Length: 85
Image (cartoon, rainbow, N blue to C red):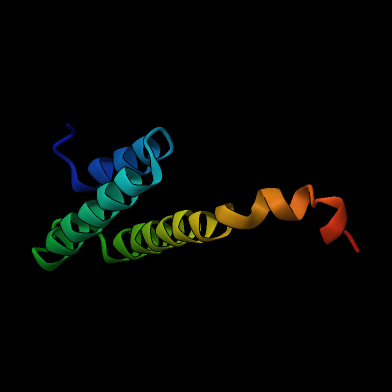
């Protein structure tokens, strides 16, 4: 695992694409907490930390929204004849 907080966050963002959604959210939330800690210690540039925090938040939201909509997508994309308009 990289020593640099920014590299750790970027690595978490990359790995989140390769693991199941629940693991990805946990990984990204952990990275967000690590980033906040590094930010409070002054270990990262404020602007860079803000950009990474935004990326983490967006990625978590994307995963959660995708999972929320996955349940009904099949039915919507291929409705049965009785459900068709």
